[in-house]
Length: 86
Image 1 (tube, rainbow, N blue to C red):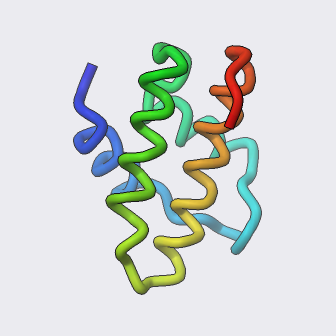
Image 2 (cartoon, helix red, strand yellow):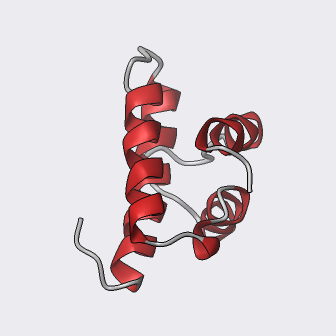
Image 3 (cartoon, rainbow, N blue to C red):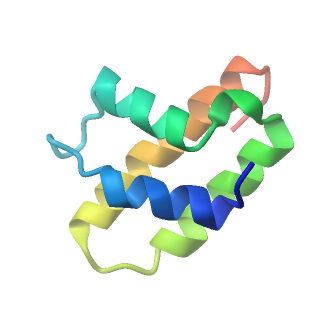
């Protein structure tokens, strides 16, 4: 598996939300697939979430904030599905 940075960089090249504040099922599948969320345990998912927020939270671009919000939603959903808390 790639590093969190490599996976996030690959995702950000491809993912640009169509609707602000909403993630479609197609976009959700792109995020989950590119980040390999199904292959991670709760600790790996939490580390990926923390990295995503640290990496993208410095941006002043609203699209980056929308993307970060959608990505963290996908990660949080994966954590919850494994029985973890967010």
